[in-house]
Length: 97
Image 1 (cartoon, rainbow, N blue to C red):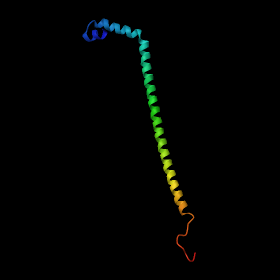
Image 2: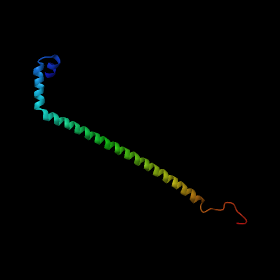
Image 3: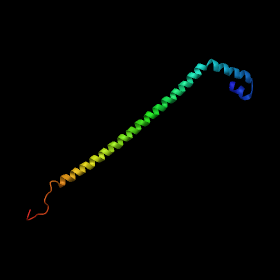
């Protein structure tokens, strides 16, 4: 009814007085709700940042594990080649050796 009266220009002064009285009576509640909204927004922002950091840490850890695995594969390959070559064996017979 209040919105209807304001939109249609009916009893504008009385309607504005009702709004002012409602605002005055509920000022604490309105301020509390606004503060709660701001607090919830801040908490959501912190939570989103925390989740983003967790994802980034998981990504970095996965990259490190992948690099470690690659290093280990290369090390095993190098060790295998070294073991196959060392100690050097004489592949060609030599009369003077």
